[in-house]
Image (cartoon, rainbow, N blue to C red):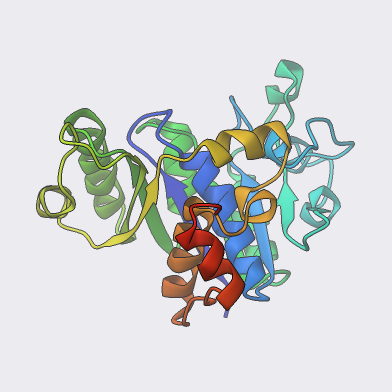
Length: 253
């Protein structure tokens, strides 16, 4: 049975889209069919992450009833599929957001795993993505401002009768200025699905227009996303080879 995950956050800049991209790529590494949908209609980024900023048919065209959802699907070399939004402001005109439900229903017949990268915040655009979700995953940073905003996002999802799968804590440096994981868990009252460290390789992957899962598969951030994907699938993570463990011990990975 297909499952729709909506990746959301209480505020922008916490690593929501990075998480949507890399979680989708990680699920694909487990040989799962995945479609990542850019549901951040006003400020989309999924196409940029995968080197496809301009496409002939976008999610906007689907919501304008000008194209079918399968026409807006593009496959990355890795096998991960994406549905980008248009970067053009003119393509925001005449969008019928009610068509998102129908498009999601069609996607359930196309792919086993659908990931919606929602708009940040608690506005109508974010609610549209939550509304079609089977499970909501909230992305936060380990500071009181971000966690407080994440709590609002969780409460909103719960008010919408949506299952909050848990929270992913990103950009973790491990210093004394950060909230402890236990404090975050106590405050949000949902499971912590994973912890993603601050990692220069994530910034480098954006420059390379690809997921860090692909550009630096043995980086700590990649392994964190693989662990989260394994948890979602109920599988064991892919272990490091002997050579990789040796390089990690030398600080070369």
